[in-house]
Length: 156
Ligand code: SME
Picture 1: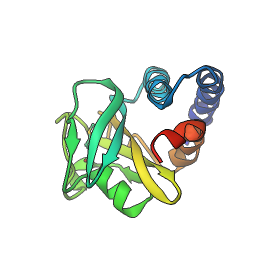
Picture 2: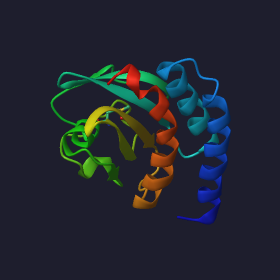
Picture 3: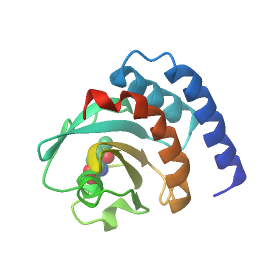
């Protein structure tokens, strides 16, 4: 990953650290992460959270076009839940079972939000560019997600 993107992640982290110190709850904190990430990272076409309810994922705060409200049975987000690890998908058409909420999406990254070894939600980011995300995006995005830790008691 180029240093420019790493620097941008750093600045986003610092900004969110300040903003989330004033967040009243998990929902507000998630919404704030989506807004900052989506508008600062120009290659994102959709940035949002899905929350696990039983075997299904329900959409949470997001930025971008209207998305699927419920994900079930298959898809990149549920793969992230089942495997409890980040998914980097350079070409969504090559991912069996990918769920296309926006048919223009070309690549995707999904990161788990974990409470006591259990995935409770995911952060899903889409791009209209092929291979917009790499393994190197996982660490800085996970660091940003760690800012939600103080709020996770709300859904544990
Ligand atoms: N592509 C996801 C569905 C969510 S939308 O991209 C916002 C998936 O396959 O799980």
